[in-house]
Image (tube, rainbow over all chains, first blue to last red; front, side, top):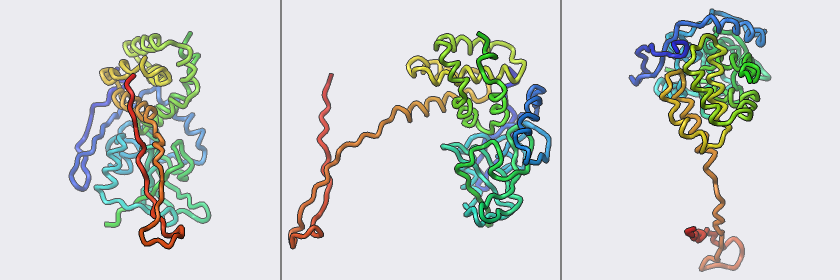
Length: 157
Length: 152
């Protein structure tokens, strides 16, 4: 069952000093690799900017400098609060802001804005990591995650 | 009946790979038609047995892993009374997200079983003591309904 176990963790804390649960799973099964190309083919406008790795997921990329997987939505909510993130109106988004995809109580996905959104649709270009798959540069509405409840955040100080 | 023939393994494997959280996996698997079909093809006991067999087998491929999750999540379509004991034991199985999947199952079942009942509070109105008799001079208030519990 080693294929499924994920025991390795690192010490990770919010600004306020609370621990953030996480894990690292550096091994990607050879079997997964067959599916990576299939997923990429469905998002032809998304530009791949890294190789697949199980070391970190989207939230690990956005909130933990690519050091680990963070998968509990409550941990993300804690980070948003304890790291002093402020919600930004979608029209005011700037490069460096973060994007969070909410879905019925889950924090399904997150990423970083790289290009501010333009009128009239206000859909920014972002980069994000798709679980164990790679990091992609893509428009916020062009990814496999629920786009119905997207929010943007920024740390002001 | 082979599970490989029943399940949309390719799509499910993509969902598995793309799962940043256990909730995403649960949502995507439970919305996948082939999981529902599998739930219809097997009895609850058969699914439990299939799950145990798959868990004890050597999971050599992503397809095998996906089948394990598929069997487990297909049980959510079975009657609650039939699966609740098994689902409460799922965290004892040592695989990624076993605990979370069990928790999501029970949280969803609880929310499905909670009903919001219109208690028929009555809104009554009365005239203010110094009323001139117009509708503006009325005070509205709600009256609690009488609830009588009967023993069967």
